[in-house]
Amino acid sequence: MKILITGGAGFIGSHVVRLFLNKYPDYTIYNLDKLTYAGNLENLTDIEQSSNYHFIKGDITNEDFITSLFKKEQFDAVIHLAAESHVDRSITNPLEFIMTNIVGTVNLLNAARSIWGDNYDNNIFYHVSTDEVYGSLGDTGYFLETTNYDPRSPYSASKASSDHLVRAYYHTYGLPVKLSNCSNNYGSHQFPEKLIPLMINNIKNNKPLPIYGKGDNIRDWLWVNDHARAIDDVFHKGIIGETYNIGGHNEWKNIDLVYQLCTVMDKKLNREKGTSEKLITFVKDRAGHDMRYAIDATKIKNELGWEPSITFEEGLEKTVDWYLENEKWLNNVTSGAYKEYYQAQYN
Ligand code: NAD
Ligand code: DAU
Image (cartoon, rainbow, N blue to C red; front, side, top):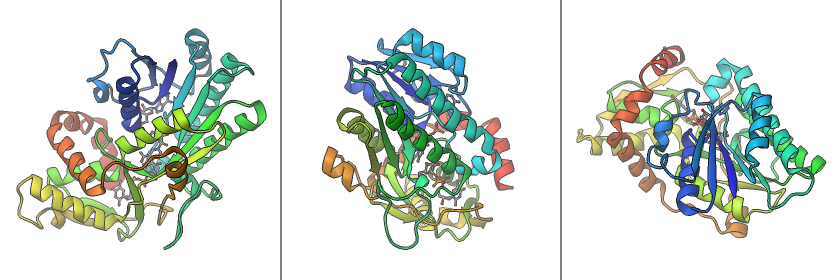
């Protein structure tokens, strides 16, 4: 089986590439990635020599390139993760999100149709999406697969649009699609613009910890390796045309999560308990900040047998250990353009 994984040099994509290469040595994996600021081949140094792995540098918004790549390689299946993924950047530059997340997805859908025709032979177009398409919850309730879409940021609106288009290609052309919508991921190799690695990096460097608003927004956190396992299950066992919500039943208020992280970091860095939390600083809130996300993952549990494999406490400790052990990776991604981004976003 020849599988195209898009965005495989990013955070979640690199974990999916690694899992598929290690678990399915008979598959050939093609990783297509533009290598934006978020794409990093250092995420894949442990597997880049595998004989069944190929890296292709390219942009999914380039229609001619995508069309000829599919004609040349005749992929059997696609797992589509490439995206602009950071909400704050979508507030500053929405058009980039429209281009990659919507136009890029349509280019891939068209290219898959053009090589698979109408006679699908175990082909799969798997679109990886987010729980943010469902909008923002109040104090109670959960996102189900049947929850109405109500995206509220340019990022989530662009992901919602791509989800609709993927389903439209299933209904209109019979393209064999699968979708999943996952909650917030954390773990190794995540770019430090996102909450957890940003806070780890700042605690390590004794820099202020910027909490948006009052810190009472709630997110439902899942270890990235468990998301990759879920993607494996949906890809192999999920039903064509279906959507699966993925989440860890693990809700945290941002401020409580950062306190927890400070406690873990104090221990790891041999700092006196309570040292790191003194760095907490409340800053201007994110525009249109969604209050609460929480996934009901009953369907994937009952139908595919997937469940998270570790607790949040275990996952957070593993994550902190990885960042502390991989100082070179962290220094490389926080030099250069990151400094400018940080300055513009936080000062
Ligand atoms: P990421 O930003 O870490 O990685 C995105 C990857 O896509 C990068 O390697 C980047 O170079 C690549 N890319 C961007 N634009 C491209 C283009 N035009 N052509 C080719 N490649 C391009 O993102 P992530 O956090 O790993 O998220 C991966 C996917 O999972 C996204 O679709 C995202 O919406 C979804 N998702 C993320 C989370 C999360 O918590 N991070 C949760 C649920 C769903
Ligand atoms: O829910 C899934 C989504 O989770 C994914 O689709 C997105 O790609 C991913 O980026 C993530 O979106 P969030 O906006 O929830 O993640 P982020 O890490 O940016 O922020 C998490 C929470 O922390 C959010 O409420 C905003 C807050 N925050 C974030 C940053 C970067 C802060 O308070 N301070 C910060 O500096």
